Image 1 (cartoon, rainbow, N blue to C red):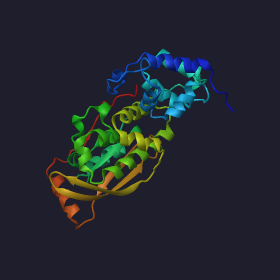
Image 2: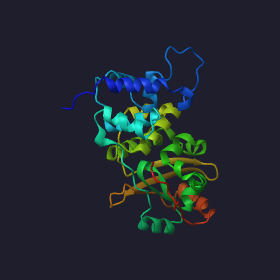
Image 3: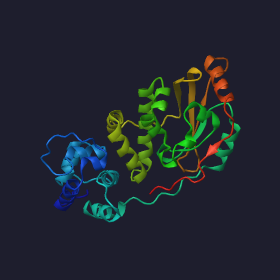
Image 4: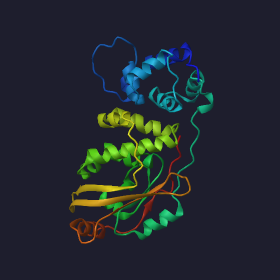
Length: 290
């Protein structure tokens, strides 16, 4: 059993949050009188997507933070490399500092498959459900992925922050909760991923639903399901969604959307894809996780 950290950790956390203004962290300015300088405990907890009670016990030295919680606190408190290293040492987890992740590259086989799938939307999802590659049909259905900066091209982020993608989903709450649960499953595979911590922190601040669903710790590894869309050009679509995991342990998944032949959705999907050139797209300069 690991001992709980000493009072130095709590002192560091209190000092660091006192140096930050809510506006610096993307929190709205309320204009109300603040009894404490900097961030309140509940604001740090919100930014780190953890409960206020847990963060309070952490400051009081009554619990030992996991590596994943420390990663979210590094982002929430805007710590630089030296400060992050100090935080991990104070928490007794100096050997658990986030490691540098390799650049995500699309595997050749899924890339070739995308080029051959001309009438069904398909995309390759990487760590954190980043959209690594897509075909023209996927762009026609969802959005012009090429116009989204590579560092922002994430399936979950688009669901919660892009109004057009949000409106596309007729059962948005259902699909968004599934996406959060899938992201939770990814987090279990690499809990110390700083890119994941940044994504969760950003969406927790921006969207109350994400913050609530992430805190529920629902996990999903489902590889199939049904999605209901309302596309501005072709109307309602009911599509089967299937995903296949790469066998090499890279965490990449191929996601394909199809419709039952002879149905209105099948006809509408054929019309939609016929209006777009069937050329695959991929980001060959995918950014490294920092």
